[in-house]
Image 1 (cartoon, rainbow, N blue to C red):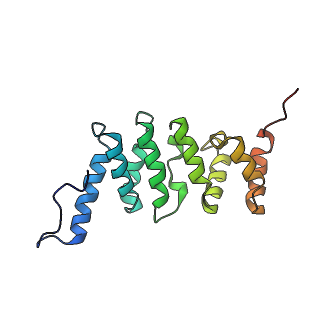
Image 2: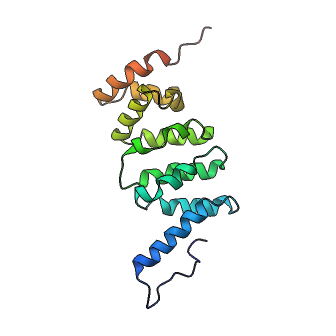
Length: 168
């Protein structure tokens, strides 16, 4: 477990120093392929509470397709904890390499907040990410979104990609 690194409060250590040491250890553990995935997931969760600029590189690197799906999934769940909720900083080019189950989790996270929906639609329009990553059900939800601005943005991107009735 990460918390067993011997940085508990001593007379010479302040809580901020302890957190910094714990955080540094979490970055190390998160990126260590020799550490079991469940321990890495705990480290990634902790990183989700760090400063965006301090963790962006580490979290982005963990979306690498060579990482286990559990690790990629932990990154997707940690990313929304960002105090700086500027989703466009999400590493779009890596999204296409993520494990298929992880892409669905990315889509759920992207569609969980209005600002992120707008950023996602902008990325699809700019061809930074494929609209196919959200699937037909989620596309339909965007096309019927209660916010007309989102519907209007989604319609030209997804109107022709919906499911067609089966021929019987």
